[in-house]
Image 1 (tube, rainbow, N blue to C red):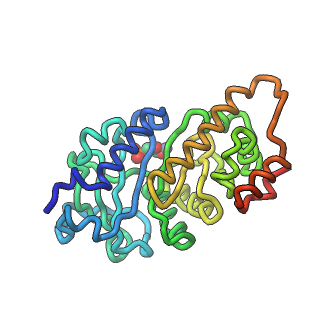
Image 2: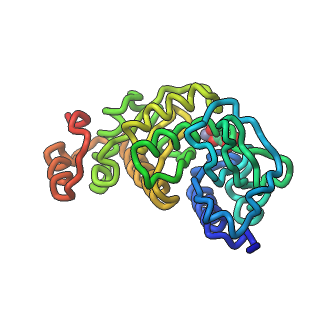
Length: 270
Ligand code: 13P
Ligand code: ZN
């Protein structure tokens, strides 16, 4: 058996959480990540027949039965993941009835998966049925994205349009726009279901006055989506209280979409 601390998926989780922390997206235990793994990726590092603990999830994820994931722990600080992956991360397998998580490694201090597991597993289910390459669900609390929620109407058109206007790359990186949920109680099946429903249309979903979710085929892809939104939100917040002399017009956004060949939400333009 090889040392799991050298597994690419453990190292990559350490690097990603450290970057997110440094960017200020994950104060204290804020944020969570889950990434689907193939059995072949896990097998060199773990005895997959040895289940350390079986933890009920409180909902049915039958579509993911038998699937492996690496998931951040609840209450754990992103800043600490790289130094102590075994306490702050866990490798899980969804049980055959879809109702339990079988812990194969991690949560060494007796901890368990993120309280947002419903939103993660439900979003994985939605995205896998749209994108066979889908692997990652990422959640965090980026400062400017959050700040914007307090001064803009919380709807998909206003939020997406405002972001697209802030940087030329935005409409190219997320032409599908940003889904928006109202403020809701987090850590529940209800917010999980609402998030997964939005994920039918969007790869980015804002949880009103809480944070953001992104999905992708890799940690880099999900990270890059959030990074692009947060950059645009930062520009928005820097100019929000200043007179705006120039803007990227809708006809210019259309030109960008045409040049880069992206299908975008035309209904989100003026
Ligand atoms: P966890 O510590 O349970 O992952 O929760 C953090 C968070 O961001 C809740 O939305
Ligand atoms: Zn959160």
